[in-house]
Length: 446
Image 1 (cartoon, one colour):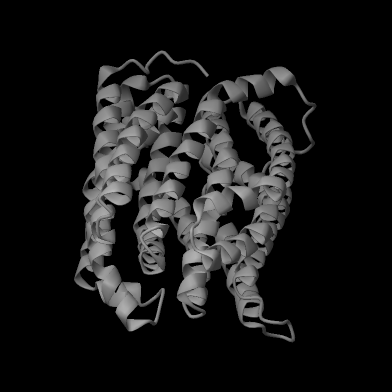
Image 2 (image 1 turned 90 degrees about the vertical axis):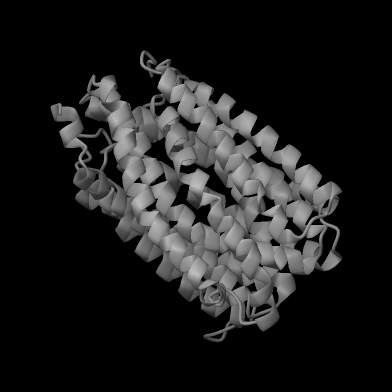
């Protein structure tokens, strides 16, 4: 076994992954908090929060996609020991994403009402969704800046910072939601608007934590973060050459997820409420998968930067084994005790029992989802984000065709509609696995 593979043993993979996992657990709890609180307000609010939060997520993914591309470059520079360049990448990412957030906030205020009206059939859902969106979108200004801090810490494998940040963020969100949704401490009850305001304020707290922590704990001189970098169009252009594909890919990927929920909304308010609960339950599994996928992506980038592309496939196999072993136990528990898990999100008895079949089918999809996402994020980690974009577009076209037939035309039961996740995951697993096996990524420069 060569030294590079030894460096990325199961233990070392876990050391990078578990802080990311804890941070994602905390971030998932923000969505859980919104759903758990609103699930006790009413089914309309529960369904509207699903649409509003996914609409927000679609837009957020533009900035998040840029940060993923930046993280890949930071990981490569870190592997090459060009530490000061990681700071330059960070600052140019901040410049780009702050400007982008301001533009999106303005455009959303102008066009979101018309877009939502075209897609939502229920007037009650439409009104509640717009209340959520109007207060949630301004939080992008804080969220976009925060994702660049995350890109820096993941790219340089200093992932323990994410745990602390996420704990602060989720505690803030729970407090703000409790106060604003139900009306506490002399503040009037704001319902679904309170959920959106609370989440946006939690994003601000997260950003302030990162700023404070970085200035006090990080070696800012080593990483070139002690002062704002002078803007250089060539640096940003190089970042965009990698990031533009992850931006488009993440935007389109979550857009199809949004369309899935629009299809479900036309099946009725109950089907939408069920799907929102299943989406949040899925998030509990997804965050574990994403922690290992993000770890695999950044370690692939670092290992190539160190000059050892021949060790990439061994690394991927180790991450796969570790992820499957952990998630098998989690998924089994969900399938054995589905009603206990669902009751976290709502206390309506018939809604709990109606959600069980959809949740079981969602759990089954992870048989393909684990390999599919680790393979796919490994492709991105090689720096060939254009190839990754093409692979996912093929998978998404197949996914949307399936959704259109099963949900929109056949109008199948909501549990059957959730089989679309398995179709997408199996396609992504096959395409990404074949690409990695081909070795065409080995000479990619970033």
